[in-house]
Structures are given as C-alpha cells and as structure tokens.
Length: 95
Length: 492
Image (cartoon, rainbow over all chains, first blue to last red):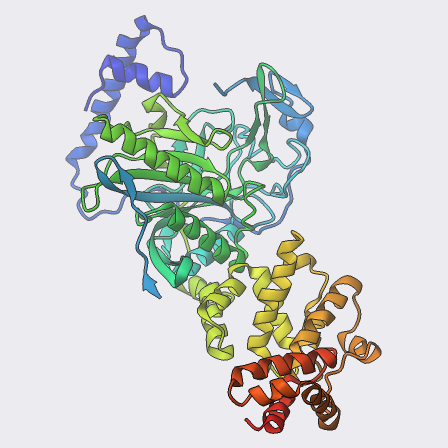
C-alpha cells in the first residue's frame, strides 16, 4: 500500500493541517516509508486471531450516574480566542 | 390485524414506491453525561454543565456512565433486539465547532444492540413490523446558535457529551404514514421504559430519514438523507416532498445524487446541505482511551426481569381483561400518562371487572374529548382519576344514569368536589323506585291515547314514550325500568 500526492493533500485537509505544495513530495515519501514498515506485519499469519483493541487484561471501569463535575464556565472558556457571556464565539458556520 | 398496504405515489410513468429507512437519535435519560460527571439537565447557563473531559482538554480521559449502558440495553430489550455482550467504541473523526474533541465517540462495527423489530400500528387496525438494524451509544455534540450575532456563531458545550442512542431501522418503511407511526411507537416504548423522555421540542428525539423511490418490485433507487427532523409532522412532510422531487427528476430522465438534505418547514421543501462528498470520510477507528464495553448475560437478564409492562403487552391485557376494542386499548396505551391515568381509575373502581370497559369509554370519550377541546394535557386534568372512578361507580351501581353522569362530570370539571356528595346534595339520584316511575308512565300514556293505541302496530314508537318519561323525570328514571314498565303497560 502506498499513497499518492492527492491522498496526502486530502489527509492533510481532513486533519485541518496546512501543508504547502512543496511539502507534499517529502510527506508522501515519509508516509510511504511508514506504510512499508507497517506492511511487514502482513507476513504474520493471523487467521482466527481476534483483533486486539487493547493490551490491558482488564474490564473497562464504569462510573456511577452522579453529577460531580461542571460549574466551571470561567475555566472552560478561559483559553477561548473569543468568548462572550460564557459562550465560545467562532466564525459563522452556516451558509 | 391485517397486514398494511402502503401508499404508492402516482407519476407520469405510473406508480412509484417509496423506500424509507430512519436513524433516530434519542437522548438517554441519565443524570450525568456518557463519559463525564457533568449534568445533563436542560436549559442551564452556557458552559456551566461542562467538565474538562467534555471540553476536550488535553490529557482528560473518558469514563463510561454505567447507567447509560443500562438504558441502552433496556431500550434494546424493548425493541426485541439482540444484546451484544461485547461492543466497541470508535472515534468518528470530523472537524466542526460543535465537537471540541475533533471526533465523536460512537460505535461503528460493534454496536451494543443488534437486530430487533417493532410492531407499528396504523389507521384502521392495520399494522406493520419494522426491522431494527442496530442501536448504538454515542456522544451528543454541542449546541450552536447562528442568529444571535452577525458574523459569529455561539457555542455552548452543555449538551456536548450527553449520551445518545442512535437507533437505525432497516429500509422497511414504505410511506410517510408508516414513518410517522414508527417514530411514534419508538417514542412510546422509550417513554414507558424511561430511557428517553421523547421531548422533540427540546431536541431529545431527532430523526434522519433516508428516502429513495422505485417502481414497485424494481431494485433500490439512489437515496437522499434528510437530516435532523425534530417533529413527527415534519417527518411526514419531508418524506412526501422528497419522494415527489426524486420522481420528478427520474421521470425527466435525470438521476438522483446521493446527498444530505435539509427540510425547511417554512417553505415545505428539502434542499441540499453538504456539497463536499469528503465530509463523509469519518476515518473511524477504535478509541484507544476506552476498553471494549463488556457485561454478562446475567446483567442483561436482571434488566429484562425488571422491565415495566410495555405498550403492546398493556394493550393485550386491556383487551383480554376488560373486553376493550383493539382501537380503544391502542388509544389508552399510546401515551404512557394516559395508560397510567386509566389504570389509576381502574384501581379505584369498586367493581373493575364490571365497569372496566365503561371506565375506558369515559376516559377516551368524555375526558380525552373534553381535554382535547380545551387543549389540555391528561397530566393537568381538572377531573382526577379518583373523581372519575367515583362517577363510574355511581353509574355501575345504578345510582345515576349515564345521562345524569355527563351532567355530573361537567359539574366536577367546572367546580370540583366529591361526586357522591354532589349526587346527594343536588338530588341527582336515579329513580329506581318503581311506583314513582309507574306514576309518570301512567300519566304519559293517559295524556297520549292515540300514540298508545298505535304502538302495537308500530313498536318502534316505544322510543318516543321512553323519551317522554325520561324527560318528565329529569333524566333520573332508570331507563331499563322505564322500558320494562312501558312494554307491560302498552301490552307489547
């Protein structure tokens, strides 16, 4: 598996990372090197082996349904580039 | 019950059939959010019900709320669905200001609930079974307001991270009526279970509707998805409009573009929402912050054992125990509050077996009729279940006639009070004393000798005499006694 220049631009856009045109060939090479490295795994026969989603041999911890957080609106918007009345303000997102 | 036939749309080239599938987003009833301890209460001040997890601050980790899991399993059981003892949370990646994480935690390949089915009642005693594809848990995004400021949108994260159940139907729905009835039934089931309050005005229940059209029996057409419908009426309107739009395009020789559309209730039309196809590239992968969701069969069995009686079961019981018609039983169980009211009336009746059916008639015809007329809800009925039960007892035991009971109902509606005491104090008791009725009957016959002579040839004119006697007794004579007396006196 390998990626072409168009795929690199597309991935960058989906991740909202600004990539200039002259960076694309370099990134394409890096990504393809990584993919080639990972591809070695396909040499291993995994027939009948369940996909592993975690390395921890434990059950997921669960919370009780109690309200024990919140009430910190000042903290929540503290880093916001723009806020008003505890709302975040963002550039208008409807057409 | 007969199997439903569905509506076909007429086009220039013949009939078209609609194929509809729905995704319902139902907000889970819980105190705190799916992965944080912030409150889910509606209407708090902006960003006051937000934890650092919900705001996606670096290093914060989600921990699942066990009540949300229970609610999802309970809902799955209510939909006769397969419960998966092991399911997985995935990240659905997209950038939008309503999602500070940059991904929604959802379930993609392994949902907590699998296939099920819902029996949906339609008009005229018809019904149809709609298949459920799956139900999964996911996070609600934040609420955005676009109309407060000229060039900026306001973001409030209070709703961000509240648990949603996404319930996906199979494409089994064939017209707008079925779609509306399906949502109504799902809402009813969840309200009985207490897993979602079903309040569409507050956004607790929203629907995405997939619509395509085809000639009956033909392969599936290309579908369009209408997003975020928040009323059952709009669901019906959007489907009708969208199907017509697609038929027009196809009959003009065009083709349908698979796209997301929005319904505009003011204009009564749907329009294209997202132009960029890549917006749908969500790049799902298992969330490394969360282990698989696992629970035991005994956990499921315990929840199953504690489920309340659901509308279908309740309806069957009303029909079997009190001889209600399918239709009447359906009316009573459709809303949980109505069923509760009826059952409270039943509990208070002196003789349920005798008067249960009469109680149903009174609740449906007199009470619902009156409430509808005044635009009121069963939860704020001026006549309580206790008062209505007392009125029905008075009819059942023969103290008042059905006609007087309507007057009594009106008095209780307007003025309140104990029905039994009102009957005493206002002299509304039915006259069952035969000699008193006999006197009235004799007077009426004596005053109308012509009619009395005719009645032997025209037995149907007996009704006129009954009416006269009832009238002159102020409606208080026992109709059965009047009938019997008249028949014997007139010799028929």
